[in-house]
Image 1 (cartoon, one colour):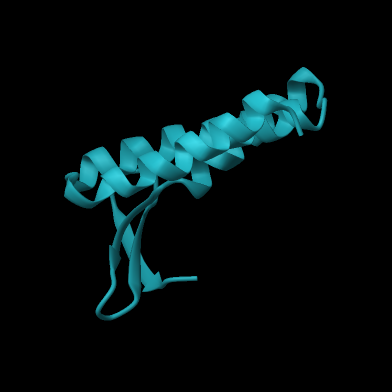
Image 2 (image 1 turned 45 degrees about the vertical axis):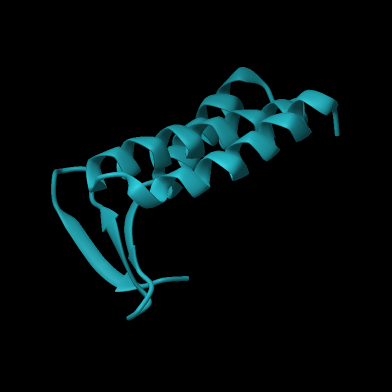
Length: 91
């Protein structure tokens, strides 16, 4: 793995700690962007073609839509994409 990929992964891990004091909307935006970034970095690390890179970015953004986590009840809220949310047990 190249140094930029490792650096980007470390940066994402450090930035996720900053989500604690964010609003729900800020968490959703950050999660989507971080997920897309991880998808693109992963695709680039695997030398994927452009189509797979785009697909990886979309999949990463979808995974990053976790918008809230209740640590007491271990329930997570996910965005549906139409402005509504659903709650289920966290993975």
